[in-house]
Length: 158
Image (tube, rainbow, N blue to C red; front, side, top):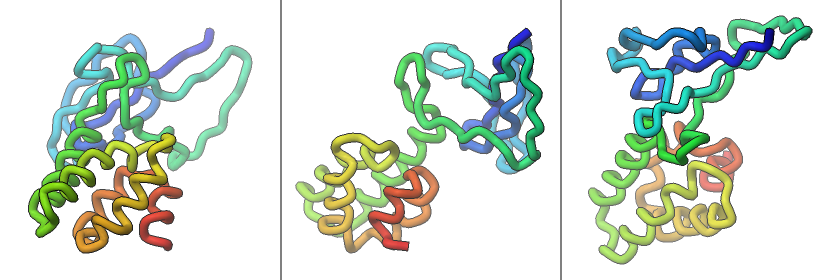
């Protein structure tokens, strides 16, 4: 019988496993940071989908072969807690900068477009490379953590 596992992820985004039993509820805390573990969207309770084993197929997986940690719930579209916290942290960096209020608002409006490739992503990258140039170094670790590799390369060039 095919099995759709769930992911077990802490509230800070550390993935514990992508093969958590679909019939159990995760309990406990992250060994890396102590945050509570979840296996479903806190907003709509939809399971965070893990690895899928279809009938009749044998998979040989390396322990390092993990599914990516999702940023948004695929059912309701709400950002997961780790995504929201990263956006909030990026917005705090913006607020602590010496940018004008208008520039701060423009950068803050563009931050969600750094997380996923959308039609507005190129505009967001351009805003960060021009308006946000003075705070790119301060925001580096957060952007690298949450943005896709292509977006990170577009901003930082490496």
